[in-house]
Length: 391
Image (spheres, rainbow, N blue to C red):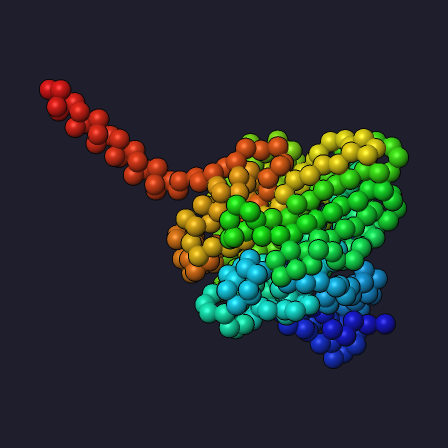
């Protein structure tokens, strides 16, 4: 047996002409490492991931085959929803799979990818102006739930899914869709995710997540992960990432910038940059990275539910993105911005990934350090003027 084709982080497919060797570019490594990491094998990734071009022997090929196809994951039903009932007038779109993950191939509108995840319209209503921020290269966006420290289920197009029974899409319209899944090995533990345009601002979609326990017994250590690899246009593999709200979000258990990490809450994780672990940070990059968040909601008695919200959106500037965050009372968020000046003004688009109902306080509009300095100078000048008047 041999691997003939492998999915590449750059969006290409590397063919294997020798039938016993695999040719990979360096951008293929994050996806391959992700698969191997899920199985507890990181030796090959550690040894090779920094080398621009390598031939990998057939033993690795056999290992990858054993893990399942790396190409695109299992087929999903899905839909694309818009922030306007008239798609031609929309500025933000979201591609949702039936398992609740993003990055759907159904009805793709993105000009820079074969799937739609979180897309922004960079111009007119023409399809060529839609650019996606989560699906170029690796389709790394997903979620997972676990209980009792032993049982989990998760979904991610790039990393695959496990232990989830997936229901049919419901409440499908041009602006909304609802997904329902349950743990296959623990029937009665269900996760409903209702995606719709936020009532606070049309710049955001709000995913209302409800975890319900009808298993007949209390479940403890209820965890939820949401993770994404930012690929922000027009510099899809070199973006700046920000995370804010970690210090005040009491139910947050883990956060960092590794968007390639597993959606399984029971898997240990770490940041691509250790300085991003469990702290706020601003404009880290430019690099190919993302955002990872894991929450612990404690215990759910039989018949009890826990509800919180995940937000996805985009705006034409950082100021507009901060206004959207404030309007929706978001408690914890990540921004993805391009490396063509996006870290300065947020233009041409700032992409938004946030949460509420996770034990935090609304972060509101946080001034940039430069703005705070200007305020300080103004106050100092005012005090000086008053002292001169008194003199």
